[in-house]
Length: 295
Image (cartoon, rainbow, N blue to C red; front, side, top):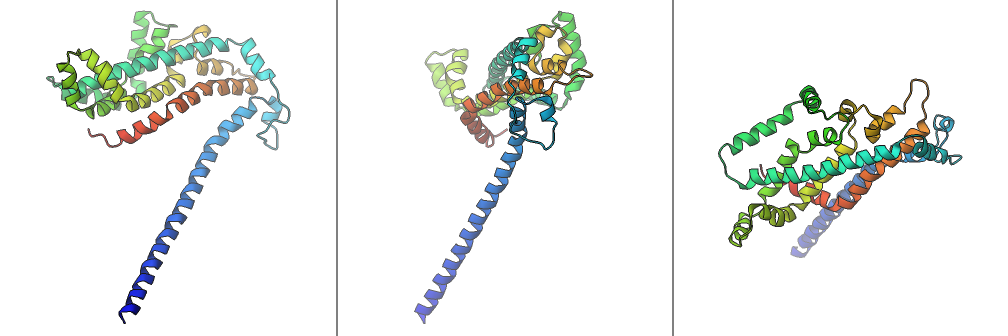
């Protein structure tokens, strides 16, 4: 009798385990299929843009729609680089995005370190007021920022493109969250060894918050590289245009050279992709670590 009950129990357990495995693998397959569909839907527009950069205009809008060019046309890229100051636009964008990212990372990490590790009067109030600025729409700040740029005489300069976005409340908040996780014992040990406060931030804090720096660097670089609205306001000289503004200036009222525009968009997207692949491991680690940081 006992043997029969034991056998029946084992059969039920085995059947339950089999059903669990079936549900697990079925869910895994469905998840992979959904993720694959998302990847394909996300990649198709970029793939179409990349191949259309080497098509004629009539083929871009021809039917049936094709991704692979029937005839490869290299004239679009040649005309973009020879007839328009695209190299200058590219250089302007690289300077603005590069310098702006470095300033954003350094200044935000400094401020985040101060808010996280220094106890001074009004710290919480000041931090709260800073966070409240995130609730202010960007459009509301355009007029005062425009007046400041005009008063300083910064139109058509790199300062006008870099300084207003050099540090953001979100960047300070992000770096504060990461800096909180740095043990105070390490900072005290560095002070005992005679390190200055700047040296502690540079040699102790920054290496420990590298994932957060990578997240902020990628977000800052992407935002500055893709910015269009602010450069449209503070630059009128074509030699100071960034890529997005320069490509927009190629669109005329009657003539649309979409092959040239797509060639420019293809080249403009490459640095963002390269930066992401370089910092993707730190970026993923930073997002994962940042999800468990306390306020």
